[in-house]
Length: 77
Image (cartoon, rainbow, N blue to C red; front, side, top):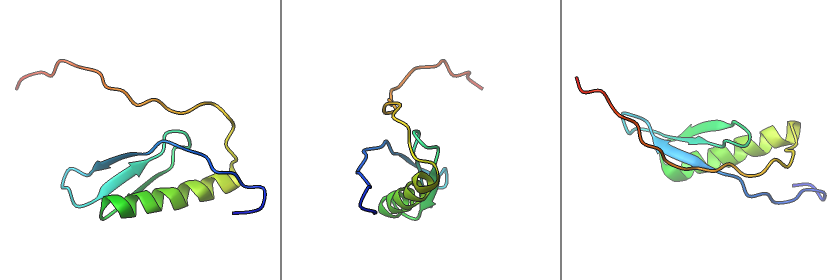
């Protein structure tokens, strides 16, 4: 980090792939998405990818993403 860098708190959404062999990590504020063989590796990769992204495209203050839930009716087969 450079002298004019500042720490930011961003959102991470992490979930396993359907085969449960990988974890996908996504940052909604920047759109960066990575993966790793375990949760910690996916998070480390997301941090690295997001820092690289922000070095090229500095973030504008737009607020943090909000994660929530909602219900849908699923069709029965």
